[in-house]
Image (cartoon, rainbow, N blue to C red; front, side):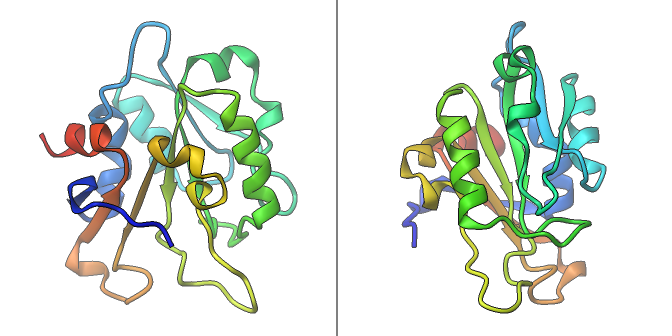
Length: 179
């Protein structure tokens, strides 16, 4: 339920490569801001992407139900953070963030306006029961200009070999990705 202008969407050759290279394309790094936050229980590409970009990779503990425990991130790491990866439903745990999880995440992120939210939504269509998928920007519209969402066709449509993905978000981040 979010309208995104076409200029704020960029295509990528598969999303795994995109995740692995995104920190270097963001062009947000400064000497005082060099940290990529990512879920402690996650596939290794979030950490490796940060390392390949010359950034500090800092894992964020995962709460028992699946949400991130951002309160456990040190104030130094939060102050140096460029971005935070969010993955729901999670790979590899399968845990999906509830709206309450996302509201808690948004409340913390509103206190750190320098942090961009990178949502890896590859598994959004693989949810069961009455779960309602949402992104941080849907829960908190004030985060729209700081949220970059990526998705593709490999998981939801069983088209892994096609290498089709996209990112949608703030013009500045899309421009840094495609130029």
